[in-house]
Length: 267
Ligand code: ATP
Ligand code: ATP
Ligand code: MG
Ligand code: MG
Ligand code: MG
Ligand code: MG
Ligand code: MG
Image (cartoon, rainbow, N blue to C red; front, side, top):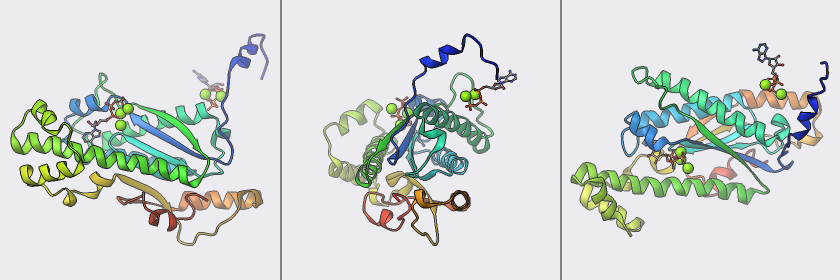
């Protein structure tokens, strides 16, 4: 490629290479989905079909990026854990973050069109996502990050179920419901749901209470060190990653079980 005298401008670019051998987690979140969900008349508190669009979108992302080992999502957000030795875009932060945001947005639009042929997306309210990448230095911090989001899912869902329960079952206005729930703790909300709305929170679907986990499942996993593999072995591993089944669960990822059963996640 011929060089022009203008090419020096390239030197002004700055690149952040994410620290090697750390666990990269990329989190995407829908922009203005509170309004988006009103515009497209989501069922409240949880629109199952809209959740399924998010989950299908994340599933497609895992097929497109075999370096993703685990994804966790609820509402309009998803976390993607990359395998520790991931070298996608040489770990360039801007590339990773902007690519994930745009893949997420376009995939969501495609999945939306499949799920809602009668509810086309209009130009004044398009689904877009932001993205951020964080590197975590050890197993504990990765797990705490995922735990934080799952606890958040539970807290939000308990609040939203109570809030909409009071509106839909007790005829309260949004202001009245908000006022009624002010200062309540979890046990109060459970009690309110049971006595005022006839809802036993424990019987609510796990997809609402726990969110959605997508994980590559390996039947016979052998622990290997990336540095010790030949190029051919690396290619073979990449093939295995692409072929691995992507399973969907709605389970606790805070306790040890989930991680102990899947040693490849934090390899
Ligand atoms: P921001 O651009 O800052 O992220 P936001 O409006 O997207 O703003 P969030 O905190 O991300 O705010 O919250 C997402 C909102 O989207 C939820 O509060 C909820 O109202 C709505 N939402 C997302 N998914 C669903 C769903 N499946 N069913 C019902 N509501 C949903
Ligand atoms: P990367 O993913 O790293 O950005 P890239 O292949 O997109 O890789 P760029 O450095 O972004 O590479 O360069 C964009 C390239 O896209 C150009 O070199 C050119 O070959 C091609 N291209 C873009 N727009 C046009 C166009 N309108 N007509 C013909 N070719 C185009
Ligand atoms: Mg936000
Ligand atoms: Mg959002
Ligand atoms: Mg959100
Ligand atoms: Mg380029
Ligand atoms: Mg380009």
